[in-house]
Length: 90
Image 1 (cartoon, rainbow, N blue to C red):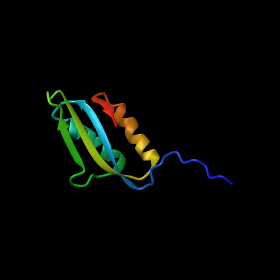
Image 2: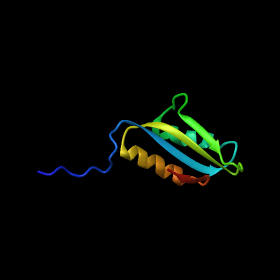
Image 3: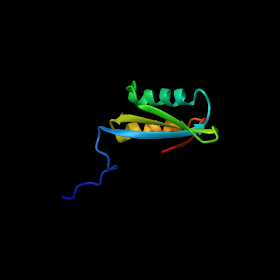
Image 4: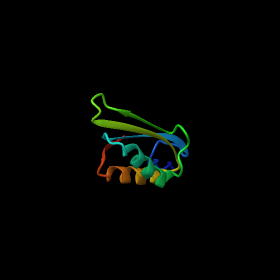
């Protein structure tokens, strides 16, 4: 009997980088961290990095999480993309 195709090629649990872009503000990184921690728990030291654009109008925040399931990633992406300050999630 053929095996059902998987919804994802990822094998869980796995380290998974989430890049979130938004307009530069003093609290954008904290906002992204807060939303992420609701879905994955406390983030370890060094899991979050941010980089402003050259003109300081935008910022990219990258968070490496320990993803446990596709459903967890879907819920995180859904909340991040529905947040007004977030312009894009990769």
